[in-house]
Image (cartoon, rainbow, N blue to C red; front, side, top):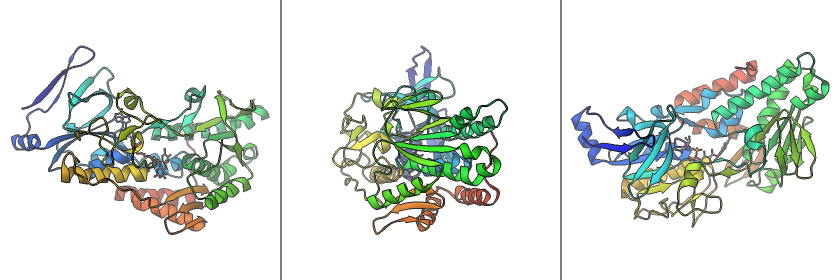
Length: 443
Ligand SMILES: Cc1cc2nc3c(=O)[nH]c(=O)nc-3n(C[C@H](O)[C@H](O)[C@H](O)COP(=O)(O)OP(=O)(O)OC[C@H]3O[C@@H](n4cnc5c(N)ncnc54)[C@H](O)[C@@H]3O)c2cc1C
């Protein structure tokens, strides 16, 4: 039985290997190469689901034990969808041959020469151990970019993970509850009910759309007096939905500007405080919630790697997704943490998912991807919800905005959900929201 014995940083011996279980499966797993996947997001999960198990023994390391369907994350911030309706446990996506092949841990350090990745358990911080690989795929995604603006990390909310959505939902509901308590001045009510979104990309616009629906469909009924004081500001330095066609951008802008309680603010945020934000022109905007949805930044694991990166600190890979620093084809990177130098692709779920599938196929056929044909990416289109049953759709054949795009937006994402439980759960949530309203419980 092969065991890997390493010395953990805390001085104890950390062992990652296999206890004897079934000699036949052990010998089979020894024949297969060990493929270690870092991350259970769009890229890692797609690779994990599609890789040929007969050729690879798959080990997944991720700080979360589920896959998150990010395009519907904004819907959970206000309760249009429930949190568990958009996640899939990693252990459902793949039947691991050995249940210990999933590690609820994060990669901290990589030793390319030793072909070893060092991990830290998410459940016991002192538990650090090493995992050996034959092939490694880095699919750790990216963080929200604060652009070094003071106060963002301390006072703003990000919208990347389910915990972020939960925190935002609780804050919105508690601000409304606080606004009706005795002794709260009208000025404070206005501040509590001013919701600010920084960043006019799809994430910021879709969150604004969901918030607008929540306020106009539910909070206006439950808090009829206070709703007059509600304001939603979407702050963007240049133009919203910049990746979309101009006609669709104008459509989205018009929809937002038509709304009484919503406004588009052109500007750049220079400071974020507990109850205010300050713009570059020094104007102060009192607010009760700031959601920061402005760009991507590298994760600390990616920063720690001394390998070629681009200006945005993404790992440079070739067209077969091999790390430029490792032309032998042992280490690959995909999704938001990487950049194909010869053919950069946008940081989207569509790209990451397609890269995962491409790599699964090329590794199964060529094992080290040395002779694999380069990956070609052609977008199937982009969709964004703008609120009030309206969306914008930019597809290769046509571009349109309105109710039809909204129908397309909902049906497209419904069919993209990974399994039948979610495909059943999501329409049930939509149905409940439509007929009974969103749940405003705070917990
Ligand atoms: C709110 C929102 C809405 C979006 N909507 C759309 C959309 O409609 N269409 C679209 O195409 N794209 C959309 N995107 C973008 C899309 O989600 C990303 O481009 C996509 O998630 C990138 O996939 P990834 O695999 O690179 O990273 P992710 O999906 O972010 O996955 C990264 C994984 O790595 C794990 N990880 C992190 N650090 C470590 C570590 N040190 N070690 C091991 N694992 C680690 C994470 O826990 C996670 O499991 C949206 C993003 C957001 C936030």
